Image (cartoon, rainbow, N blue to C red; front, top):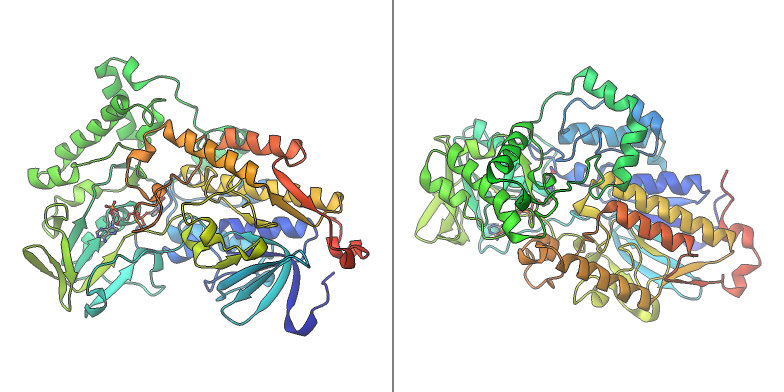
Length: 555
Ligand code: NAP
């Protein structure tokens, strides 16, 4: 039953911001709890990251059969992935299918950007405003805004002067982009750049890759999935998902038990070689690659040797393998023919370490000592990760405090899901949770399901609001920092650390403890009556009408 709507203000039980993997499932789950929900989505369709990142070559780097929802066995059985790593159009089609199958679209307002969210203490509700002038109040506000959804445009002088096309991989147009016969400059060599470069090189007259930091990448060995492979997984999905849920990565991968340093050199190299042939992410082979520099060096050096073997031009090979950070501490990528692409005659590589970009001008990119005439500049320059999307919303909590002020020295959360001072505001895969270090759909499900448990607890106990305590938050932040400090992650200038955004505090944002461990921690918190949260009763003037206050009971 919908609640009354005074003077054009919508009233809902829950507002969900974003209609990607997280927002869609949060909506479905909310409805199952009998909560009256509305989703605001800035895109014209569902899909989140898979709606925006339409650049040629975009595909997931977790196996498709695992990179999908597990909450519905029927959905698992009826959807058939066609490739080991699905391309963007297929993942988007899957999310559109999910939206239709669960009839989600009717509660999603597309083309609508949430601009502000303010806690109203007297009503114990959130007031959310949008760029379309809408105002809605809701008991819960769930930020399903994504970890990599605020594209970052680089601070390069003159970029607005360029007369050709300028595209960002994270804001790719819906219309096909034609590289044929064009001189294409690609700035950035992270996951997006390495996926796009080989495709652009197939038709462009010239591709010039501007590299600031070399990536470590291994062959994805993507391939069409055979009916047998699909059938085998479908027959064992429940066991596969159980293993994934409790694993560190959210994937059905057994945890490595050996140190890279305890095996003889030739045996270790053989393991890396086999992994290279099979397309196994190299970090899965041993248990200390992300904690021990000497162990890490064995994997890093293996990749550098591969670069030297594949790339014929020694100067290019040297630029591509001039890594100044441990492997895996920036996102390890999976590619198709990335290094091979530098053997093409129409591809050049510019080492921005030697010759930094001076400016973009009307006709191309000027680096120190040389100008590159271009028809198109592609910015594969990444995102203001994990906090960027939230930072763009004016979130105001208790006593008028702003989230961006609370996080001015780096994000602070309780479990990556709640923030002290912001009652009933919840983050799906927020900073301080395993999120980007794991298979995202399963991490998202874990958060949504945990929140569903919390909402049920609040209703059963006739409580209006849950507020993370500062003490619990401080303890959790210490835990996140302590866990990160035991690894090599903080040694790299990565987006995990906020280092790609000038002025952003350098704090390692995800929780490195792994999804299985984290799930156990969250379950224990719930079992202890949501330890670390304080609760509010409904305001007196609303408490009489408990039924409408708490929404209808779940069917
Ligand atoms: P990214 O990993 O942050 O890479 C951005 C690249 O742009 C880096 O090489 C960076 O160099 C460079 N760059 C940034 N500003 C620059 C400037 N002013 N001048 C020159 N170079 C500049 O971004 P991304 O490739 O979009 O990927 C972000 C994340 O999204 C990934 O790590 C991954 O988690 C996710 N993603 C996943 C997939 C997939 O799975 N399939 C695909 C795409 C993205 P520095 O390293 O020196 O900063």
